[in-house]
Image 1 (cartoon, rainbow, N blue to C red):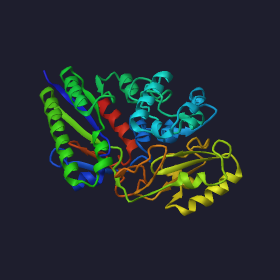
Image 2 (cartoon, helix red, strand yellow; image 1 turned 90 degrees about the horizontal axis):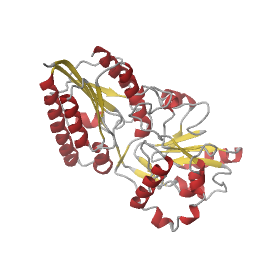
Image 3 (spheres, rainbow, N blue to C red; image 1 turned 90 degrees about the vertical axis):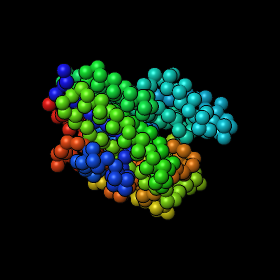
Image 4 (cartoon, helix red, strand yellow; image 1 turned 45 degrees about the vertical axis):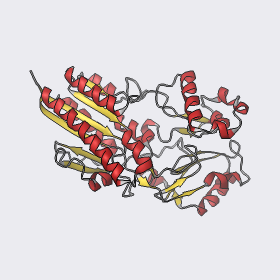
Amino acid sequence: MKSKTIEIFLFIDALGWKIVNDHDFLTGLLPYRKKIDMQFGYSSSAIPTILSGRTPAEHGHLGLFRFAPDVSPFKGFSRWSWLFHPASFWNRGRVRHHLSKILKKIYGFTGYFQLYRMPVSKLKYMDYCEKRDLFIAGGMENIANLHDTLSAKKVDFHISDWHLSDSENYIAAEKAIENGKKFLFVYTASLDGLLHHKVGDDLAVGQKLDEIKIQIGSLYRKAADFAENVHFTVISDHGMTPLSGTVDIMKSLSESDLVFGRDYGSCFDSTMARFYYLNDHARKVITDLMQRFPGRFLSCDEEKKYGIYRSDRAFGDAIFLLDAGIQLVPSDMGDKPLNGMHGFIPENEYSFAAMLSNTPLPDRIGRVADYFNLMTERADLL
């Protein structure tokens, strides 16, 4: 006997509003469509926001790293930083990947963990935000995530394993339907990876979207075999902005008289620099130095607007955001620019996320943070 309704939310990382419209993506199957304000930051801030309905100011996730020497879990490891020479070897992507896997095991992290290009010598000053798996029960400590909420509602649900490939997660979702699951949150990330490298290649992007259409069609038909009604909604976290230039803030700062850890702390993400001032001299030098770069420091009002204002300044005493398209190279994330990047100002035309559905969408849904309440309301109806 068929279920009355199956509710499917498919998360497609980096499916921006501009891409959706440029490629006329699934207008027939999913006619209800909304442009969504992205959550300021990267996937490290957007995913916990989607899974909890809370902003980074509440859940504490903005960049992956933050300057916090008092609580850094890496103090012991950093004592061995003298061993990690030459830097040219230890900064290789593959070497960094394996070193990250070793550290993840040593520290018992269950969430997404990558060192990227963070210097080993600076790790003793750094805390890492995603120590726990955000998708599982209790994954966000004192904040109820989607798993916790659906469990409390006693909904028969399936949430993807983010460790798996897109294809594996589509297959797992179809099996979950066969096993009687009524609510599905399906996670896919491969579009994001492709867009970082081929955002300007319409042919490659179009082929990828065609592949996604086939996977969605298969999942939709499977659900239709097991339910009278299939509510299918695609959600995303942000778009992808093409590269237009690079700046080297780290070099300019290294040429000043400031000493990291004595005068200031910093986190250099791909599109922003977050500064922690340890004295007034550092504040003045950095404020003056940053005037030469294309971008601006976010105001307090902007931080509140974007949901990243914290009175404890955990995300930095000052956040300098580069102009859209300009990447910080090198940064703590890498030493080469990518053809596309996200994490710029949310009002940039390439930044907007998208929500597509075969079911009417409430007018109140306008931000990435709003997905959570819609998902839990739909779960209530089950």
